[in-house]
Length: 50
Image (cartoon, rainbow, N blue to C red; front, side, top):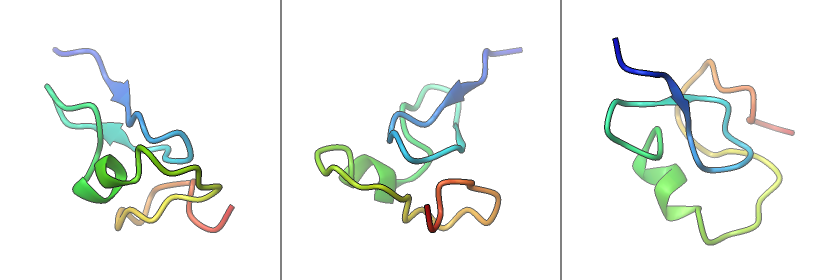
C-alpha cells in the first residue's frame, strides 16, 4: 500500500492520488497563489471557507 500524502496546496486537507502532489488541477493551479481557503471540488476538504 502506498503512503498517503496530503495535497501540497497548503489550505487543502485532501489526500493526493498516488504519484501526484495535488488532489486536483484547481489546487495545482493555485500553488503559486497565497490563499486562505481551498477551492477544490472535494466535499470532504476541510480547507473550504476557512
